[in-house]
Image: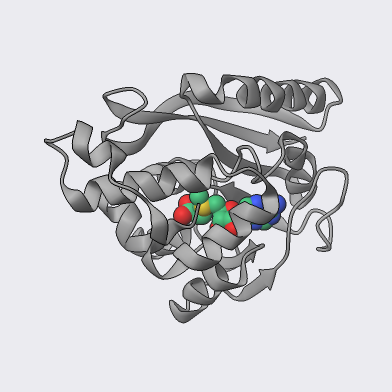
Length: 239
Ligand SMILES: C[S@@+](CC[C@H](N)C(=O)[O-])C[C@H]1O[C@@H](n2cnc3c(N)ncnc32)[C@H](O)[C@@H]1O
């Protein structure tokens, strides 16, 4: 189904939900539960122009939460370097700017249309249109970054669980990575795989846990839980 073909199924059932909110949920659902990486990419290309306004409608809080958490653990100096992985339209970059981050931000994003929106915001030094994959290093000098953030992008047909390793390789020793995964029951299988990957990297002495906790993903009431949707947030540093 195309984003533009979203029906009114949920609209009829959730009468207290505004039409704008209902349509935003429809789109998020279609993209999140896409059937393949290619389909997800096509949907993002179509959605890019409306992505920011739809996520504002749903009160998407993950970028704000992740960046605020990350800034507790890194220095805020002009030479501090942060990599935004699967940066989308640059929502994390916007939060860094709003919170007075003085350092350098680079963005990696697989979808050209999403990255184009990020570019227009002039937040990042480099905008690299590139996919991140397990067992494939990110072609950036190892150990370059003080931090890496990845908001809302670990999930089926998005970043595979095995992507924690290549992201961690971009960090200097002591560098911090923060990323999220939906805490919904529907995401349990994926989250288990992600946590297995994290365990493996901890056992291999590559990363160590700073904190893992649940934080709000979408603040508006969602269909899956009838309440705000939560994300599990993982904060690790490179050994
Ligand atoms: C839900 S959006 C999140 C974007 C942004 N981080 C935010 O919080 O608004 C997921 C993004 O991940 C990107 N993405 C999915 N798989 C990817 C991959 N393997 N490598 C890089 N980007 C990917 C998508 O194109 C999309 O822009």
